[in-house]
Image (cartoon, rainbow, N blue to C red; front, side, top):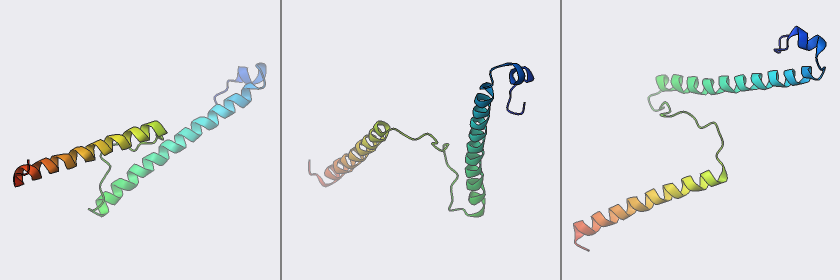
Length: 101
């Protein structure tokens, strides 16, 4: 009954239901454990920020879902484009300042 199975299901339904209820219960416990672990990460960061001003609390939530290879590649390409634009802007400012149009 502690795993969410009713008395009726336990005694009168398919005996294999016990296995499925146990697996579901273990899965829920695993999710709860992971949620508490992430909460501990935030808690640790909060304390570290209070004790040492060099530490910064994260500005956005931790990314707990792994990225696919395609998403990683898209992020790398986006960052690459930002760097190219930044250096092109610097080059233009340099050219304008020094009269090298």
